[in-house]
Length: 263
Image: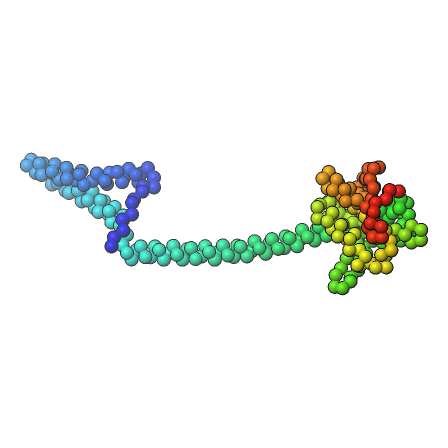
């Protein structure tokens, strides 16, 4: 079996040579006829030798070009084997690159997560002095504690700020601090308020309400938070201030589960 491969010239010079070679069979026949006709004349030995060389060169060029355009079974198998080996090496390199990308992505994710935690901690630290003042002066909280953590029945709860007062007030406030308020942040606040009694049964007799303090709050998130009955605090001049309309009524959880006028 012989496989024919179409020859494609790679540049102008190659194309010119190829065009000449394609015409060589006819041209060589013409020169041969011309030589026979010239034999009837008296010619020098040098001219005959020159014509012989021209014919030999032309026929050799045609034969060589034709030979280079043919691939045997053995050569084809060698080519296929070489391509298969190259593909195997390419696959190996791709797998190696994929592993490296996954490793880099994991490291980058860890770094981003670490930055997020650091920024979250920075936001909480920046918010606490302002929120402490608001809880003390606006809501008359007697005890104000940052970073409260507790565990019950294998489950954990963390509060950014917890404030409460006993006696006649007998109220409690939970503050969640966010760098950017999202839907998940609002849902998290809802879960915290609902499950609070399970983790802090000692405060189950207190009415409680929530405040969300955030650096970045979109209009949509602001609307949702207020509809849920949560106070909003925004940062202004490096201080957090309450940013709820006068018509806002906080939502109380716990004993009464009803709305009361804000103070």
